[in-house]
Length: 134
Image (cartoon, rainbow, N blue to C red):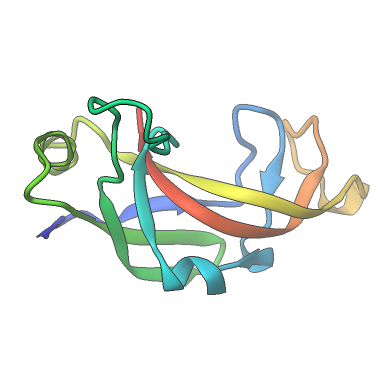
């Protein structure tokens, strides 16, 4: 495995491009820690093509610091595509991860809304995957 020298942010409590935000304290990490899969742009292999994009590797050292969830990507050194993405992370071309979350509970309470937020807040969720994303 190729362990990145970069710690990437997976999720924060900032409003995202869809107008909602996710409370970091409400993200259940327990199942993800058992299989910390790292995907590319949330693409999961379907088994229908020899040219499909497979998992890149896994996330290690998953950490919650305040309202920020981060981890270190580890890429399969025997997969040419995974190595190409690893190199793009290492040289700074790709700098972000995206949390694949299953929402469990939301709230439209004004007390949880922040400036720029147009959708309810996800107060509880389950992390099911992490993707390096463009």
